[in-house]
Image 1 (cartoon, rainbow, N blue to C red):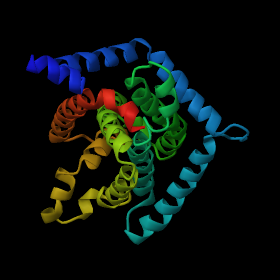
Image 2 (cartoon, rainbow, N blue to C red):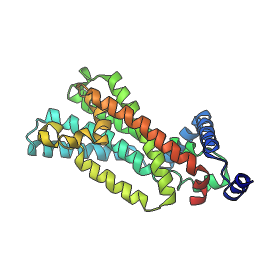
Image 3 (cartoon, one colour):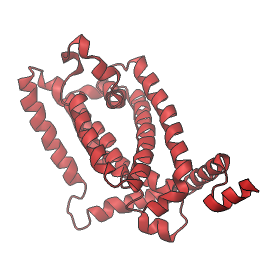
Image 4 (cartoon, one colour):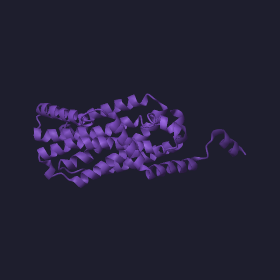
Length: 278
């Protein structure tokens, strides 16, 4: 009798039921993954409607930033241009994908509030929407990557299958981070500012604009414990013809497993309340 009264009062049916419903939401979103892609494509198209170059404007500005930083900072750091510009170019493109997905993930459920309140679409659909939108933007920025690899000759030594594996690990990890910040941001609206501050600090602490071999040995914990560094290194190093350390793959695999377990558990326990947060 007490259990029935508790269920009637709280509306909860136990942790197992909540996880079953969360898995049902995930399965339903995967069955309609084309809807998430369509929503992401529509977001990109509508954002640049009426523009001549569309999202290529961002690619153009990013290319100019790469050129400016590569020439100036390469001279300041006494690093050959043919080494520094490709390093910076790939760093900016892929680090931008990581931080962009995380920052936009904060608004995943907030911006979808109207649809969520009027439809019964799976919540995971909007998580995939954010990830797909970032991948579409990355597709435009790969123009910079291709130009740099060809111009400086790295296309001959680049290990594309290993880089593709690194990109998969990158997407898998930013996926759970996007889900986690989406849930928290739906409840606390000042979280996006905090997340943006963290990603800005990460841009300084991560070797995007500086070479990792230039820091003293005693500061290598900045690299070893930095998830942004491992996400970036798994993709950038193979494209530059360099090897990826084994501990980087172990770090990313462990982070993905632990991260998805944490994010999905929180999602299962808050799934029914997310719409009310909005």
